[in-house]
Amino acid sequence: MKKTDVVIVGAGPVGCVAGYYLARRGVEVTVIDAGDAGTQDLRASTFHPSTLEMLDTLGIADELIEMGLKAPVFQWRERSGGEAFRFDLSELADITRFPFRIQCEQYHLARMLAERIEAEPKATVLFNHRMLGYRQNENSVEVSIETPYDILNIEAQYVFGADGANSVVRKLMGAEFEGFTYPEKFLCLTSAEPLEDHIPGLDYVNYVSDPMEWLVLLRVPSLWRVLVPATESEADSYLVSDAKKEKVFSGLIGKPDVTTEHRTIYRVHQRVAKNLRDNRVMIIGDAAHLNNPLGGLGMNSGIHDAFNLCPKMIEILHGRGDADALLNQFNDERLSATIELVQAQTIQNMEFMKEGDSEQHRLRKDAMRKLVDDPVKRRSYMIRQSMLPSDRTSLPA
Image (cartoon, rainbow, N blue to C red; front, side, top):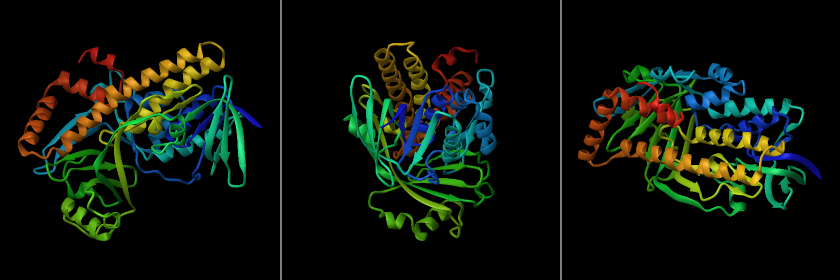
């Protein structure tokens, strides 16, 4: 039976960040993923200043910055009339080396790190390997894996589940996944059409509020991503049709004949696992928590999970800390951060975007205008949206 220190289930950005963190510190790591190496997941594309600071400790922030677009400004914009409330992260240059977001599809980071993990002497990445189950005892976890050819059993000291929203690891743990699912479906259309030529004043990150139909406009290096809500009554076949595409772009820029590169439908959830640990098995990223994409906090929060768990795992594997105490600390710290920051902020973001009552929408807009005009509150808001440590709010405005 193959033996390793840590099995990581999931080779997306969160799993690969965890794998590379451990591997470059000499931990024997096996990363497995049910998909193939060419998978392109387009869901996440924003890397926040706090995440860039973390990735910089692994020596990869500069390379990610080169692959993406630097976005110091994000805006909340009124669809009707075009009034924009702009937030410039350059104001935070006194507290972070990275006072900007990087717009870059998540699969670029995952692919880069998968290659780097493979280059480490005690690490490997196995695509087309699906986890079937695990059994654990006092000293180890036996993981059963389906390969393209047979069943592989690996004995590990610990297992990280970073296998996404439909996490097998979470299900095997029996962890309750509490929360709710939004009634809307989300449709994402990507296009090389230069939206900035049609809509004056766009930044790379634009949250467009409207009582009837909100939308998100995000620029990545080669494309614009357009995210719009869709009702349950709209069939998936219609949502990915030319008719729907033409309706979206006609309403957005008055031009129906726009070429799209991708048309993807998502269900969006606000859910948090009741526990992130089952003895020697932990879950991180979307396996542990899900939230709506407004604000781009989901993937970033998962990477923060990895940066919380991995140093503790190093201490445990080197015999420098009590495993139960450290892993319980991980569980408590990340649950608290997820519920108090990520869940609360993303729910608030959604409320602003889709407020249907015209009077409530006006009040919400007035509150946003006051926020932009208040230097202290604006700074605090940008720190929260950037997922920087809360104690930085005490720094001079």
